Length: 126
Picture 1 (cartoon, one colour):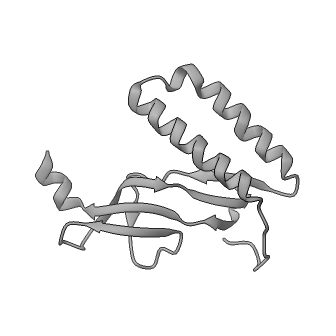
Picture 2 (tube, rainbow, N blue to C red; picture 1 turned 180 degrees about the vertical axis):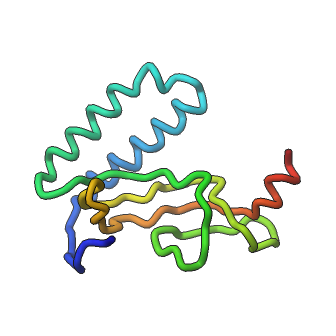
């Protein structure tokens, strides 16, 4: 579900902080160091949530999720010629949402910027 057409205003600084947190988290996972800083990242996320008392602001990493043209929370770059059975393989910017995750009532604040490719292309690389 999506929040009822409310125009949510989120400070650009918070969006920038969330994008940077996403990058730090992603790079830490790649280097195998996430366990060392995960607690710090979670505390920063928690502080951002507390600043927005009427709802949560959070990001989602859609890596590995299926993509279809009906999906409106992503801006995509298609890698390869095949456009069947697309899957998200790289995330440049995460999806940033505002709302209540437990109730499933959220609004997209920033569309994710991603690269997608056919599942066939992934199988060919293995």
